[in-house]
Image (cartoon, rainbow over all chains, first blue to last red; front, side, top):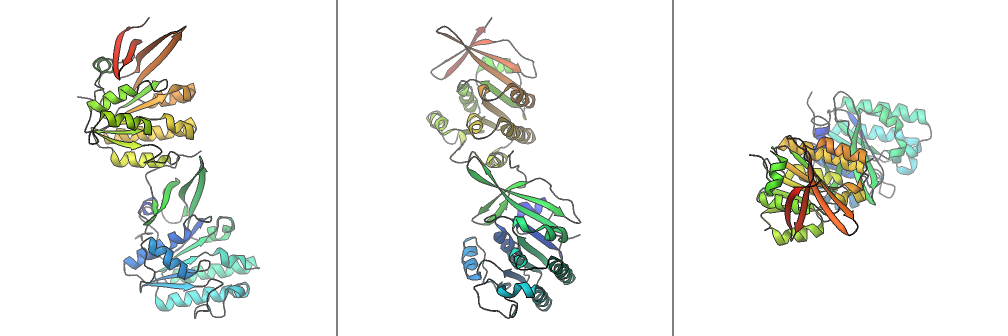
Length: 233
Length: 202
């Protein structure tokens, strides 16, 4: 089975070549762990290969992201990169008209439908939703959320898009269960310094490196040192 | 021919240090740094040293920069990020090279068991790359159990002791482990940076 690069060479090694296309993956991590950088790096790898990609930001305004990501060498103004700003402070867009942040409680299904339709029309090969946590927090009915989420994943899978959704560590039990793979970004304190470790917790359909490996957020994005150990207790 | 320390009698006692070997120098404080200096000089051009800033100053007086590649712990590499050490080690080390590593500063930041894990990783890298590793370890910083774990992984062990009787200080050196087997203690004299191995000690 062919695999696609995550844009992070060391992680591709951990995954035995990369992600299986057409599936959805969850990237978990606390604040500052690099979830957004991960999502952008994943999408920009697609852009490099001439793919159309879609990024939906629900937390950090796109304008700020464009600036931050430029420093890491990622041009979010590239014509193949389509960014949708769905943060609470932004203007309504055609995608999220009627499915705005304040209304997510009632319109989670409408939002996922809108994304699905956009992927169908524009033939996006890579999609990132960052972070899903924001959506989930506003949904009152867990069962409804689960049903909608499963339908959403199935629809995206049929369309052949590879999807990365990011989530905060504490609120992603259902997503972990429902997605094809889970990658966790951890921060560990050692001797007064933060150490960063990346772990593949689940990867359906492929063997993978089960060890936690060190990573850094560098001037070029995330770098994973797949041959090294973290050396922590 | 295997690696040489540049100290004739020590080379005879150690026997052949084949590519892929690890020499553990168990010492007290900074005793043994002179052996490292001599070893690096004897292998200049093919040597890398992972050292403290203080040792770097000393080495810079003795070596030309091209002689020994120096990686300073706490400056070039963060001592908390041990993976940076194994990563740098893996990238730098080449076959027939000699690497010197001082473990003391790391034992201040990490439990001995963690440093042992790093050590075993370095031993594996050295074996794979067919290089030679010399490691200086202050044995007062770890317990006997952990020391035994280090010893199991080393191919050669040099043991340096210091005995104080009244105001008299006697220093001894022995080979605790090598393919030739161990030896008894010999008198160790270090003056002006020169290492002399004398007569056997009773």
